[in-house]
Image (tube, rainbow, N blue to C red; front, side, top):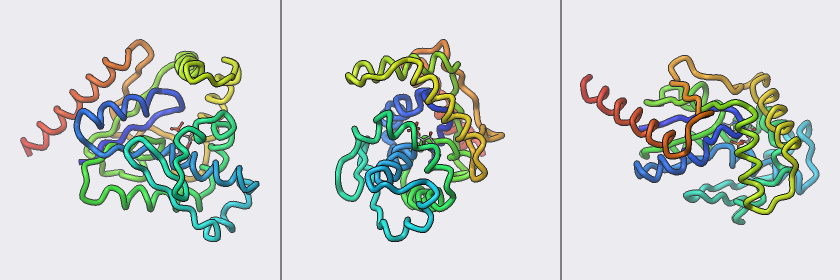
Length: 220
Ligand code: DC
């Protein structure tokens, strides 16, 4: 079974997805982490978004997901990819078709013979259009920014609330306006607005949707 969870920045996708995947014993695939990994590598090497297409093959990038960790060329970069620098650049690199094709191939290969829960922007529309369950998670922008702000404060990162609001708004704009596989709710996705829900409630609701889908499958 494939569960696709899409939605804008800061809607709580990864927090919710990790918990739901754990409960169901599904493999969790954080596609945002993969785009962040490529971005981190390009930033370190000084490769601009408009240069990445021609350099991608030479870069020989290896990206591996292991549970909730991400390894870039064999090194654990789970912390580094969450920095504000990466967050500010990731949408520009993600809009490059060569980057997307490279990562989408990896994502599809990960789905073979496994129950997976995948979160991202284009999972239900492009990567796995036949996913059995598609959820589109949203929340008001102020609420998304507040959650992200608290999360970063807890980690000890120094960023202002305004910087986070602006980062979220800019990313949503670039992610939904790009030409290839933009952020968009799939026609058959179930929209869940989490503005007034807590984490446990959202997890519970998605588990309920999974059970309903599994029940539907049995009746066919
Ligand atoms: O989910 P996230 O905030 O970690 O994602 C970081 C960026 O990666 C997001 O702003 C756009 C890009 N992304 C994408 O283009 N397609 C995906 N399936 C997942 C993420």
